[in-house]
Structure formats: structure tokens, C-alpha cells
Image (tube, rainbow, N blue to C red; front, side, top):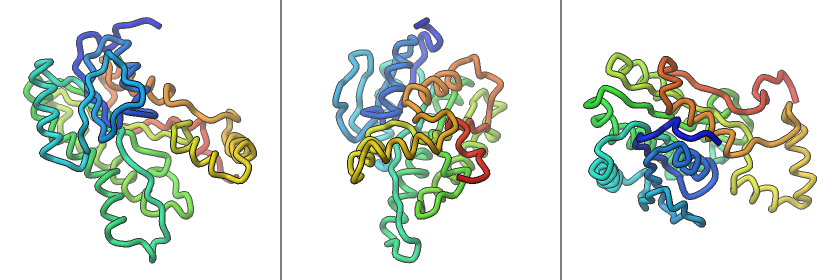
Length: 250
């Protein structure tokens, strides 16, 4: 692997303890970035190249303190990857208000909390890249997944609005919409099925490449967007779903 695409850059990755966040933090560190991994959980396998901060994306004071610590340690913040989030699926008319709010807090407001914390540093240096991890749920409605797609549509809207707001001040904001990716919660979903292998094959057959995506494939897209290679890409969403969302029918 060639190194140096983020050489010397200071980066924050949320949800860095597992899945797409862990893959992103490790890939960025391998490309020369000083990586701060934010997560409410400790990583199962800590990467010695990553500085971990145990922080919840809904805790504004905790976020501000962690961001200040990163800025004190590195002197700047060049990129943010907002990856942390959680599935919230329910029947719309049976959804408690608390679950509606939890969905928005974890999948939309949490990203805004981080953006608001890092933007002053990026604006001061007139440079920065924010990458929000959205979802195919922000493009296509999957039955019985309410209210998750509401938050992910909002996250793509946040991406576009902030990207336009700060473009002239050197800050880019883009998003990535992953499709089915082999992260721990998907592995657990398969494992909880009556026939895990049959469930996995069923899902693979729905995807045009006939395989499920990997966290690293999303991480490489984030690497590109965070790097100076993508310096004229702004307020844009990139689908990483093997083409699944383009199908007319099942």
C-alpha cells in the first residue's frame, strides 16, 4: 500500500471502535494522518497509531472537550469523518417519541454536533474536509425501516447545505451512502437467522456484484474525499452499494 495521501493531516473519525469507523481510522493512519478515534465504546483491537477518545456523539460538552484535546495535540483539524450512528426501525404508528428522538440524535444531530465543533478550526485555517457517512436509506425507501431513512435523508441535506455554506472558505463537505456492508451488526443479523448461510446468500444475490461490500471499500472512498485529491468535490454524495440502488425491481 502506498502511504502519504493524508501525510501530516489531523483527522477525527467517529464510531472508530468497529466496522466502517475502525477500517477508516486504520486506513487513514496508514496514509500518514494523525488519527483521533471517537467512540462511546473502547475498541476490541486498538490500533497503536490511533489516539482513542471515549466520547458519545450526543454529548456536546464531551465532544467539545475531545475536539479541543485533538486540536491542542496536533495544532489543527484537517478532516472529520462522521461515521457513528445506529439502526432504528419500527412501525411508524407504534414508534415511541423517545425512539424517534434517539434516531435523530444518533444519525443526524450527532453529526451536526461534530461539524459544529470542528468548523471553527477549519474556518480559521481556511481548509478542511468533512465526510458524513449516510446510507442508501437516504436515497431509496426500504419498507419497515422507519424512521432511519428520515435521519439519513436529513444527513445528506446537512452535507449539501454546509458544503455550500463554507465552500468559499476552503471547507468541503461530502457524504458517502453505503449499501449492504459486512459490519458486525450485519454479521449478527445473519447469525440470528434460522439459516445464517442461506440468509447471507439471499442478500448476496440481491447485489449486482453478487457479494457484500467490505468496510475497507467504504474507507477508501472516505480516504479520497478527505484527501486533497478531491479538492473540487463538494456538497456531493457518493453511493457505495455495488449498484444495488439502481435496480428497478428485486
